[in-house]
Length: 342
Length: 235
Image (cartoon, rainbow over all chains, first blue to last red):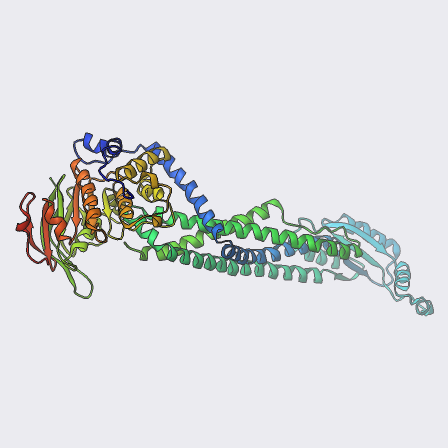
């Protein structure tokens, strides 16, 4: 017989005792008490189970999940790429800082003796790393060597070039206005005709970097929002497809937290996968670029090395993915779950 | 004390449909009763009020002396855990095994695996389906699916079981078996309320009958009375 006997006296008594023994024993129908400790153990157990189940569910439809993961990865990798580029430019510009210098032009006919004294005086000023006197003669020979106009230079009756003291300021740890202060102090010295700051382009670069930094933030915010929307929409579809399950869970006494849990884990897995793939994209991209970049840089005689993602940046990237995944899921769940009422 | 008490309860839906009107009755602790009436008489609405799937528009519904209107949204899940429900369409989840379907209320209530397995097996054994625990519910027959639904309803050892047309799609023999299960639970002190329009089945069992018509109490038949005394309004 296909249908087993429901009131089969052979198999039932043991089960009867197990199932409702405490109900009858207590003289009325009462649920047995669960200790706090076992409740906590069950809670942890359920978290683990839900985490694994949500991951398996994602892996069950690998095509769709992979697509979502890659989209999330791209959204996460884009601002991170900009950030890494910016960090590299910053590092590169630090070597340029060293080369920024102040040229102090001396008045014509300043005696070399006074010029040397002035150099010594400037060298002792705070914020000055190096002061170097270039006599008009030296300047002229440097000029003719650099331009190849030695014939023209030899044809000159007088040396038209003034003496120059080349000053390299200490930029490390200096306040932003300190270079300008130094410039002012130098211009007020005796024998000084004019002071020229070769720093303008560095300033511009810093301004561009400031702009770049803001751009990174704006882009990160926009793409972060995109990640939230992508995850929110994915979770919304997932909620729709599991509507029956949600109804049943609510009917047998599932709390909102219980209903929410698998979806939050789904969001976390999406975020984690997106973060990891973004990390891989960036690593591969940097590795791909490092060869040409180093060749290019070596042409300029710099010892600059392309900076990749350090550990904390990488962890931050992945953590951001997880956080956005969780939050996106939470938003979707709180928006759509309350609409499903048994 | 009355296990379930309806005190002058009315329920009207948006758009003015009056599902229940000034309904009053009691179900005592450990009692088994049938709720009958044709479709639209308000049977399902009545069960929904006890499950807090709906709230009464007027009047009070009390379960274990607790006025359900006083429960906050956060307390509703805990109320539902004390009530086992069996649906006509059994509401099983086909994406998981029979075992996991029955285990669901226990996972929700916070049981650890060992305790949980023991209880699920006991419940499945009780309905005679222990050997199907690893199968998907979709592989089972209608009667078997309904029994899985019953196992899920009782696995948490609720003191009250509600059943909405539990034999709706079953032949008389299977229906009789399902009713027999409910009687067994009632024998150990569980209160049982079964909504059904299966007049023949109800007639053969000498339990209390509460008859509804158009949301009103049409009449009652006390337990042990002859089936001939059943209310009119049934075909």
